[in-house]
Image (cartoon, rainbow, N blue to C red; front, side, top):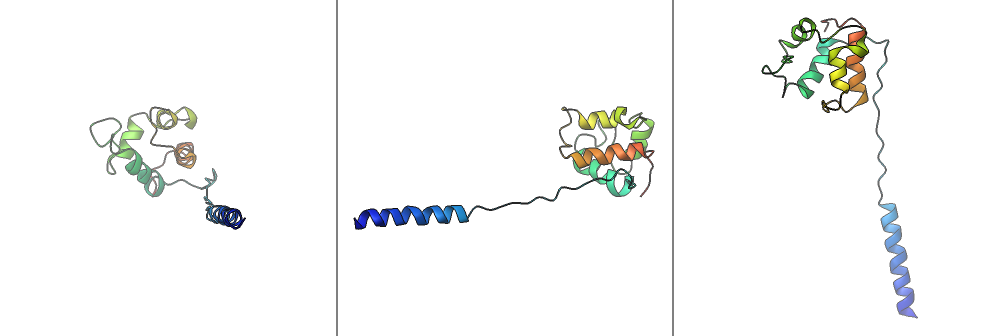
Length: 121
């Protein structure tokens, strides 16, 4: 009887420890407001450097190195209106370009193009 009670107590305590040790994660999802200005220098260029420059660092069009990216995108026909149909946005949302997995990154690029694709800081 003592063994059964001991085993039962052990199982109960183990279950309590396992259940109480579960962590709850909360994630803050970034929102992108289409009314806010999206700045090329502060928002878009860092995304391009972080996500694209490994492949588009001068040997593949468009050239997305910091000193070349804006000119390459604009003169290469990558940013046109409507923004949803621009080459850059279509590439970003295509399955072949999986670097942009976060919806807010895609929205930032979309809104930047829709706002006129300005070379602003």
